Length: 293
Image 1 (cartoon, rainbow, N blue to C red):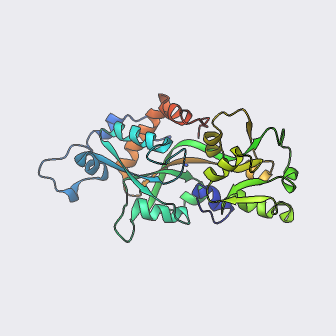
Image 2 (cartoon, one colour; image 1 turned 45 degrees about the vertical axis):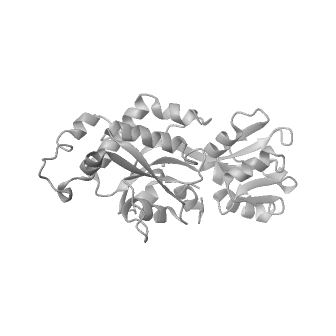
Image 3 (spheres, rainbow, N blue to C red; image 1 turned 60 degrees about the vertical axis):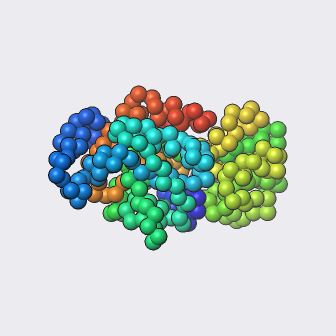
């Protein structure tokens, strides 16, 4: 994902309480019944979804293990949410914009200039109070995972990692225009630039790690966990950099701001999927440790 600043790095890639006591049935009562004569313009967002029997879900392309080649954590979770609403899930794949605001505009509240989108709901939206308080057109809610930055390293080449000093002489891989890249390019007056290798994606950086081309990769922990997939030749640690070590963010979903009944129904559905262990099972089936939001 393309990231423009320290804040947008965790806003972009790089997701409650009031709804927690509701039940899906309670939300549905009075919302889903539509008189036969009612026109489409009279239906609420949730009623429209129920009428057509499909929940359209915006999913990032090329974002393993969350959504890539038709599968991933977000894909499975979107299926589970649709099932809770009693409908089918229809994916709407898209490529990340330069900012989260651009993604929300395209896939949640406006659509693209050529008429693609918006979807009913968008997956994998970071929840940050400083950002969400400024978003008027979308409602961001229903956190289901917590993400953070980490470093995957080869144990044979780097038995421990106390600071960034080893990367003056040994190569680290990072995704281009990511927060990891920004930090490593500027840290300690650019001391690590010469050995830093920039890749088009975290997936490519992880491939280089496995091939022995770099000794470590800095990126989002979920991507690293999935890429390493329990291989005992590697270890995953929090970054030895205070700025990155402190950065953690919740991941949730987004709908159009005025989709009140859909927001309530999806929050209830997510609460139930969390309570019965479905969210944890889905996340951990892709080799990640589920971090509760």
